[in-house]
Amino acid sequence: MEKAKFPMPTMRITQGYNTGTHKGTFALDLAGEDTGKDWVLAPFTGTIKKVLSGTYGNWYWFESNDKVLCANGEVTKLVALFGHDDRIRHKVGDVIKQGDNLCAEGTSGDATGNHCHLEIGIGSYVGTWYKNGYGIYMLYNSVKPNEYLCLPDDYTVINTGGYNWVKESMVNEPSSNLKLYLPSDAISWRVYPMNKAPVKGNECGFLKPSKFGGLVYDILGWTQPSVAIIKTRDFGKVQIYVAKSTGAIIK
Picture 1 (cartoon, helix red, strand yellow):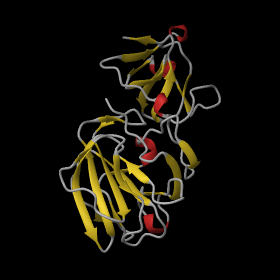
Picture 2 (cartoon, rainbow, N blue to C red):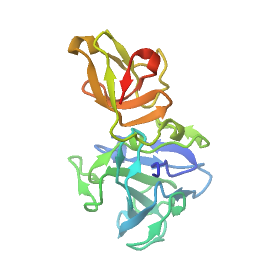
Picture 3 (cartoon, rainbow, N blue to C red):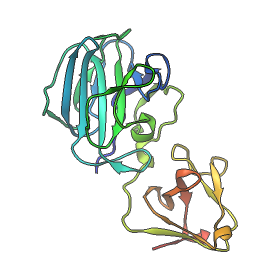
């Protein structure tokens, strides 16, 4: 199963979520090395579903051919929207493999300086875009790219935009039909956010198994040996240390 990946070898984010021309959106502007017009790579193997050229520049809607493994542990189809390339390079129906050149930075439309506009939507392609309450066009089913795209370990990072990104090596394929049982005599159990190492001091909260006579969760995947991904009511999707020595039971 492919992991959805950040689409440029160098991360330089020049505009983030809900700011300026991104008001009310989860859009990012990517400038790469900022020395020219860098290539933007396919974040997964997919198909061009829509190409648009006009007042707002050149745009591509790109849907994953299959479900992909995301940075937050979800397995789902994704749609990526890329904008501002200086020319049209693809037609509807073109298939592009993960890691191949999909488009390039540019200044078409209302862009200022060479960059690529990126948005990520969850699920299959359902349409081009819609105008939000701020009068800005945005992708349907939009989600935060830093929660869905993995950052390969060998990437060059210049500017993260202030967002936390999960490295590819931290996300492993989910196991099927496994459940985690936390014993009823456990007073508290640390859980950790997906974008930090699962070590003491990085916890985002504590589960209270004894309060409920024990707790049971579906195991959604693993970020490393003995560290599972679960979804909790209070903390959302998290990492949890579940080695045999802890008293946790997995079956």
